[in-house]
View (cartoon, rainbow, N blue to C red):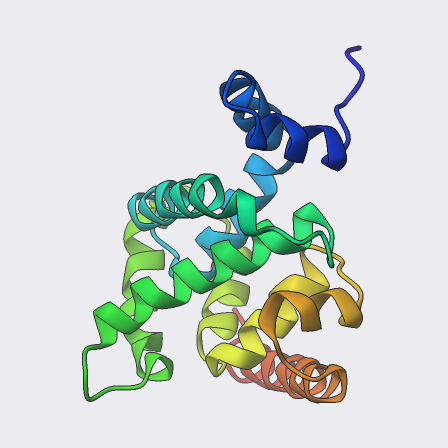
Length: 184
């Protein structure tokens, strides 16, 4: 099994013109799958997640020189990915709508992508998540799926730790209620 390259080495390679491609491959090997699924949980559709991944990559490569290493590389790339995913949702919502209003549109995308063989319980759970306001959904996803501590979620989202804890608590309660009301 190959030794995984640490974040400091990845940053050094990304900053080096001769090692940039190797650094990018190492970054994707370490974070690519987790980032894709983080993005996918926000934007729902595979095609949209691929577009956001591409924009995230462009921003990482363009901004690596400004990375101050005040947070981990993982936190930094999650923040870029989160911002790009939210930017895509804002474009979809339009000028006069909140991205929170996209719940039904995202549910339709979920159903389109799921197909006939999808696990009904998982689809119901995902629908419950898509009913949440965006900030609650982000807090829930990062805590539940990515198992991030609140302090790291705060660095990714730019939100206060106490606000994130409240958002997570409300998200859990709303998910439970939705599942109870819509159980199979």
